[in-house]
Image (cartoon, rainbow, N blue to C red; front, side, top):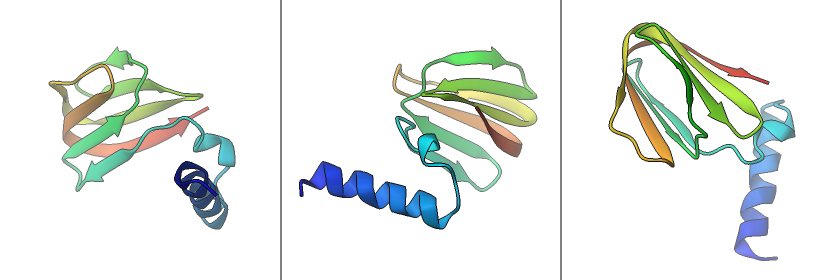
Length: 94
């Protein structure tokens, strides 16, 4: 089995163990939360809404909503973004 297929299978196994729907993993890039102060996301599809309290980000087949205080977008590329501020919640909305 190729490395990519093995990694994809391992990702689906993890989704099963966490009792999360497998379709959430398909096409969604890596997301990382550092404490409650910084959020990082790869493979986003654009920022849909932006304020200092709510940021909505398009991703594959869902939307990622970041809520908090004093949120701001840090320099980003078309493939990745960073958000700083006091992050209160991250929601995955399908």
